Image (cartoon, rainbow, N blue to C red; front, side, top):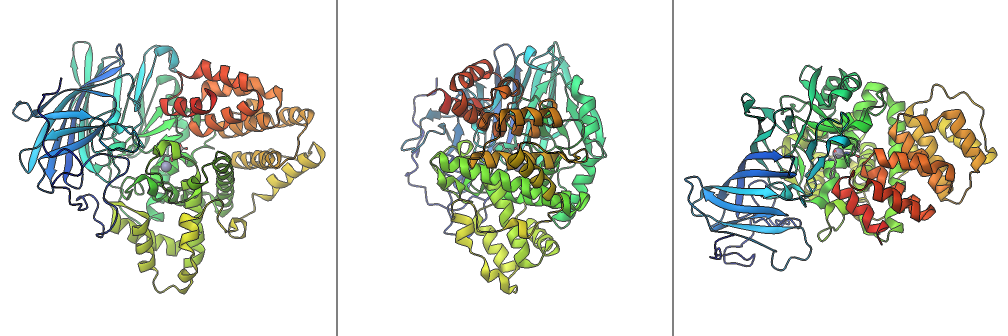
Length: 636
Ligand code: BES
Ligand code: ZN
């Protein structure tokens, strides 16, 4: 139980609340200083470093241990407020072991429920406080898989996913992307298992009885959402001069084949596209996640998480690897200050990722990727509009009262990337953008910035370029729906025409007879996107035509999850019962939100009962963020 005494100056309207930007966000006065998704008082007292020691208890499915926080007062305040969510705080002590006053409460006056506040008394300018705590079964950052749910089926598995605001359910912290701190983490796990965390190993693995302790350190200051780890029966292999791949033994070889060598090629090329800024993290490693992972990839530093779904065997899904690598500069060094600025992380990363792939595989391939992305944008805009939340189609949306995970869509990715393509035309091409990116990364590395900071920097950098006056910032940043920009006039179209004409042929005559053996996976995605768009627009594709298509192109048997997802989606949208078993199988083996949510939505329109029964069977397989969102429209 917490001590009875109420910590002083607890409310946000206390005597010492004059707002000043925290050290981590150096931005001009007048900008927003508080983070709407965090209760922490980081502009008054800043967490400078974190040292975690946790025991991973698979029997109870909890983490237990302590988190030491080094806190510096920036203002004359006598307390620090941290974010916590469903954590059981047991005790808070000073370095010398003496007890400190603390209190967990529902934040007074909070408009939305993003967790609780943990208020801890401070008695010096720099204070080390140690919070002893346990996670609970409700901790949304954690996924526990029973051994039967793993690839090897012999050992259980546990991993974390803290972005966007789940970090507070893993540790008490200032859970805002505006705060960066170095950290260390020591993880004690059953001896048969390995822990890999988002840092570099520090010191030897220590075996004690039937457990082992793995230690990692992250010396580059990072946001709470980048603190993460996976614990499982893992083996490792080299995939590049600074890169190791970790995976369950049964998938390691396939992972190695998929990522070997290209990982280094991607790092070097990404560095060129951002204008040469150093790779600051030392190693770049990949941990293969179970296919229930809610994302394709997650840019945890020194330990990108990559879904096992993205290993089809032909490297056709490695653009995601390029994407996560680009986050080493964009996102992990230059960071969105608030979640409304998420496009500064993801839109930039998508733009640069495709520049990287264009550089390596040619402009035609870049054009293809851009068009696949444009279709993703079209689908996202359509879904958000239909759902009655058109405000979420803005690049800089107002999401102060929404969980960023619920605002998540392809809009910040694709509208953001499209905006940068548009700006590329305005400033005169790729080299001009690279010169600007060099300056952007140099200026903002290690900092958290808002959309306004990007805009000011861009305008200053290109002040002599007349055409910059043409940019309609309001339209791009705050307009809803699809932007007024014709991508096809600016992208290389050489790989596009054949997928469109193939799709047109099926739509017009219910068949096609052309050689398709050379077509790339992304061309198949685009082909299926054309068909899906046509069906949404009212066209019909007959059941025999769908069956013939499957016979010809073997979509049901594809190892490419992006193609398979689109095939199931098309089938559901055509109300084709022949696709139901395949869709059920897909939903039982992949947990990535961008597939699962649209598929359940389409299935709900088609066969609501079946949608519900498939969801019931799989809900413990998905991560909680996905389960919650699907339940929101299926459990009604
Ligand atoms: N950082 C994101 C994943 C993420 C975003 C997790 C928001 C939680 C909240 C990661 O870099 C990402 O963008 N993944 C994409 C990859 C794709 C765009 C190539 C994904 O998983 O879909
Ligand atoms: Zn990303």
